[in-house]
Length: 196
Image (cartoon, rainbow, N blue to C red):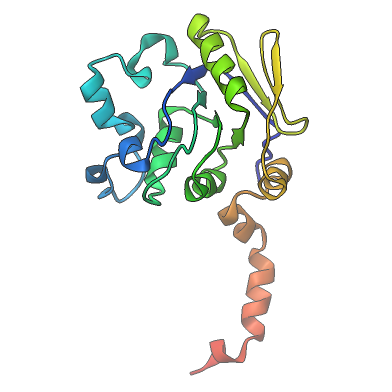
């Protein structure tokens, strides 16, 4: 079980409201059997249209671990491939004005915190990173603060998901594995599992 108390890394600004999961990972990439290789295809169509000017293609952001987005990020279809593609590209946390509920839940399920902040905080962070992409950002889930150089501001995350990250209970598969013996004991006591 892996606790997530804070995330520190370089940032990447991705401006725009209502960026949906169809843009994050186009439908033709949903046929994969595993999520391996999805990181290379994140924002595939947007990046093709931008011809090298998309944030995910710009050299100064290639080491980014924190994505800074605007309002209603991850809306649209519920495809879990979207957060998988972002995470497999190298992003370990997101800061935004708001997130679509299912996208947020899919991020929690893979250990990627999504924290919200006021619109002016997000704009300031995006501007700071544009000015100096090498300046690290720290998302502190214990104190619910984001810092970037001399800049600091409050962030928010619901109590339930926040506790899951702090305690390391966000990993449902890990929770099941941890409880293997209790599951076996329960299964042995169920009369309908012993039918012959």
